[in-house]
Image (cartoon, rainbow, N blue to C red; front, side, top):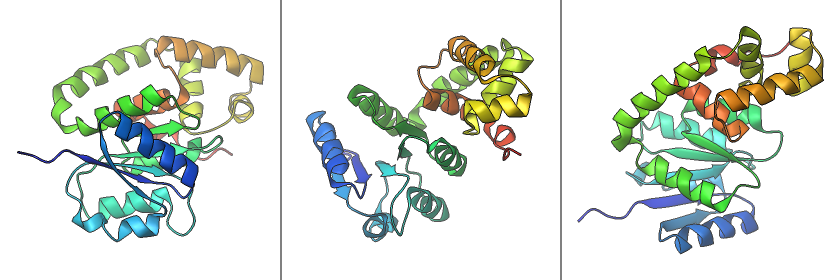
Amino acid sequence: MPHEPIIYVIDDDDAVRQSLEFLLKTAGIEVRGFESGKAFLEILPRIQSGCIITDVRMPEVTGIDLLRRVKELKLDIPVIVITGHGDISLAVDAMKIGAVDFLEKPFDDDLLIAAVRSALSFDADAAKRKAETAEIHDKLAALSNRERQVLEGLVAGNPNKVIAFDLGISPRTVEIYRANVMTKMSANSLSDLVRMAMTAGILDNSTKPSR
């Protein structure tokens, strides 16, 4: 019989790591915790399956470093990154490298479990992803030009003030467009919006540095 997948949690914050371990174990999911990216790198080449959850900001070896190593080793293991407030641009970088999702702290327990289960079934859901991509493109087509510009600013990790300056409109107007984009895209959060942008293939074109 196949082994149950293992979730590898890497976070230098003991409280966050232990909380995640407890949550996953309570959900009946096997989990192993690591207090640093460096410690996890020692076993990474031997991992064949499962899922990695890593904080994006850690000393010495960051979550981005771990993602690059996973890519270098050509390991087919989904990676979910955890970000703090203000780390959206880092999360975008992570998804461009290959992360399947990112979660902003503080995150909902059910949302985390759902993200893990989705990551574990990623390869088995090719047909579902194809349908999801088509649906996202339909939603993108319903955006106005200005809404699309605001969307691109958001997934690039730019705050409202920067988007407003780039587009020559007021921050308040950006907020209105932002609300419209979230509604039209049926996005529950900014991370949800970034995931959609990644799925639709528009992330690379929308993550140019602001002037």
